[in-house]
Image 1: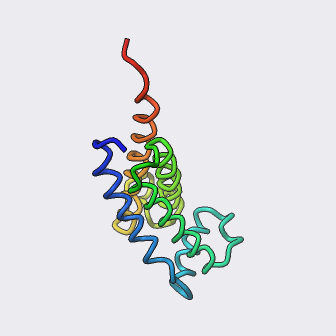
Image 2 (image 1 turned 135 degrees about the horizontal axis):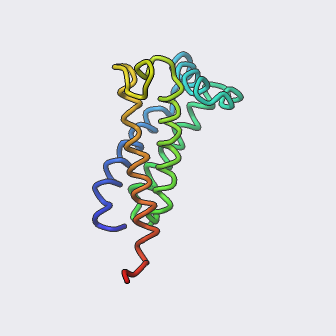
Length: 139
């Protein structure tokens, strides 16, 4: 891990670890609510039971968080994971009614929490692009 990536990876990784650990035991209406919101954005997730979806989401967040803080996981690889997760959250923002102001992409007050996830996409792409260009020499 490059020293310059340390603040980014540790801060985002700790957030994902905490989020995933907090979702491990979601059941009932909490799991159903999270599942329902995800299904509205990605209908194919409707094939999963709400409790199973919550577990898969929790363990995905834990795995991504651990990969971010692990110094031996290459930046391009962890960046791809972060980008994919961020794109899913941005899709959730774009497809969930009431998250955006009419006629645009600017968030409503309720949408601000999801709109901020675009930063995850930017951070992930930065790690991917920096990692891919790291070995190239300037001419």
